[in-house]
Length: 383
Image (cartoon, rainbow, N blue to C red; front, side, top):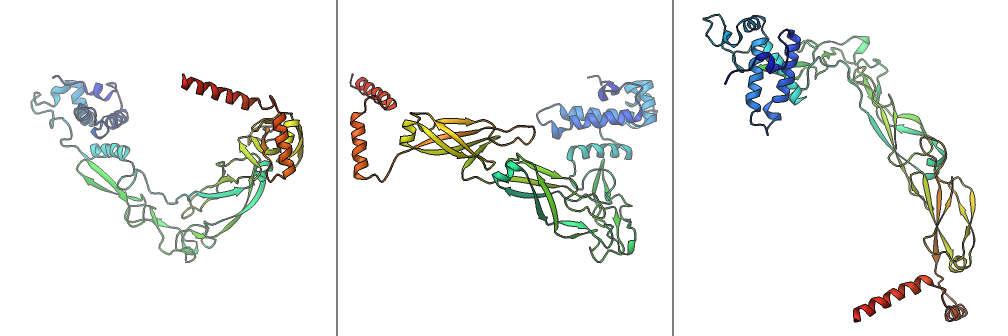
């Protein structure tokens, strides 16, 4: 089978620059790596084809020969002038190994020592989480709370540098300030965290005695936090720069406040709406009447009960709910009636209820309808 044009294999034009060829190779090798294409039986062959094409085009002399003679420049038919045979990983030099190590890092991330690039001389501090429980009333109004946050702050003695006496850290002699050490294994270049500086890229010959060279110390801090009106359970508030101090002068992390709104003894919340179950006497439900209910803002509202109300009936109080965390206005409050059956009746009360029941005819439409259906059901079963 005839070999494909190397430029076509990499997906670049014949006039492509060295950087374009290298970039195209990295992209193709990453896409076609067999470890990422276990369901593609042709992946390994395509992967080798890409490497063969790059091996030919990455070197200016070999590229010039290929541009002039094509594949014949490397198959020996040109009579001694083509250099080593092309193909796959054979005879790769340091430039090829470096390019492939880039692909290796793209595929496997921080495996065995992390990604490319120089070590960080200063490390960002960790983000912190604080769980805050508030009442429903506090969620309605919004509140300002002072909290104590345990964590680390920049060392006052060395001003976060980690070095005593204002001295500056020096480059690590093992990794020359890169924070990584490389080991060549065939065409792989494996990077590992420098064991001397632990990836910092710098060492401190005379560490600060107050922080032990870390540039930060443990200390509790008091913070004033504004909780906006309308927050719900699960609301997250970010306080930038209020997390842990960075290592050796690095940037400070963030503090995240997670809100938990406690259950309320009277109200239940659903978004911006509130629900309140109100018990009413059997007499009030039957004859109608008026009740007084509380509202979340501490006020009172009078609600009329229509005669003949049943348990579960809801009435809406518009604009008496919770404010949204974003936007204007307020939700609604829903009153749900719970008709209460009387207990601990006296003899006279029982007598009156029996008398009322004996006089009743059509006073209980739901019961009449239900038992009518039951009778039809039984009659059907007999038939």
